Amino acid sequence: MGYSNHDKMEWALIFAMEFGRHFGLTLKQAFNYLSRFGAIKFIDEHYDYCHTQSFQSMVSDMAEFCHRKGGALV
Image 1 (cartoon, rainbow, N blue to C red):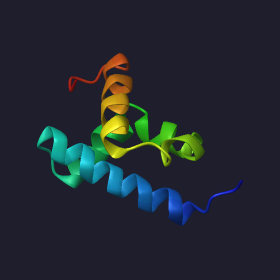
Image 2 (tube, one colour; image 1 turned 45 degrees about the vertical axis):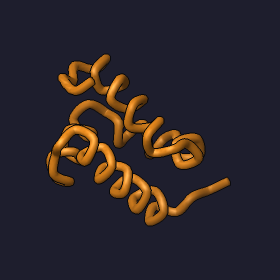
Image 3 (cartoon, rainbow, N blue to C red; image 1 turned 180 degrees about the horizontal axis):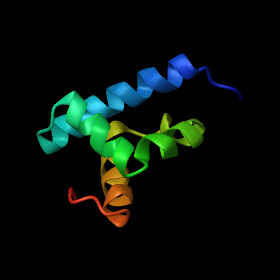
């Protein structure tokens, strides 16, 4: 099934807000962190899976994903 870029971006922004809230980051800081360590690209490429998971689960999973790529947040 194809998803629109609008749907993907909307979900990614909401996810970034939740990620930021969890780690005490602003939306901009969270989005930059997720972009820097490849999580935004992962979400774009695997949106069909990501958007079906809870935000809590995805925050944990993406924190670990970013950590494996050099990120400091866990």
